[in-house]
Length: 190
Image (tube, rainbow, N blue to C red):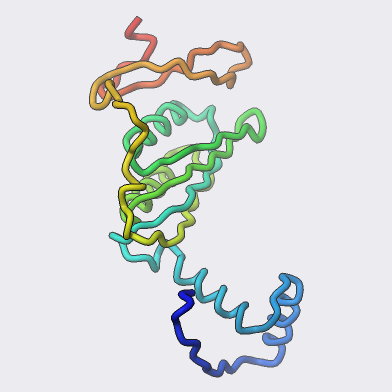
């Protein structure tokens, strides 16, 4: 909330049992009063991706769980992340067990593109879960959302290879084969 904003009082009617549960919840969560808890609930509801304007600038995460043994899913996910490199700030990859991986993708950009990325991930075979969570970003300094890493991507738009260190197969092999633009795999280029 902006310091200059005026607070407006209004009443809320709800069943006694619901208000008792709400009061217990706000005590458990450490709120001083109902107003703060209601304000946070409203903020969360307004920040739900479905309620944010498509062209609004936002930052957040896409959290996904997937089975990396499903077909070429890791390759497809890597290619997707390359397609959205301007929206992706960082990724965190965690091996949950022999088959499942948890990945957190930190994103920033217009909501339309972030939703598009999340939806493209969600429909992939082997993806069990993909959830977008965002918060509004003040659009005054949109230069921060541009890639300013001080380097050019010489491979942008052309086939290229990477030496990724993944040990999914247990062999310790440092090579992680994945396709790029022309559909050929890294192994076929050697």
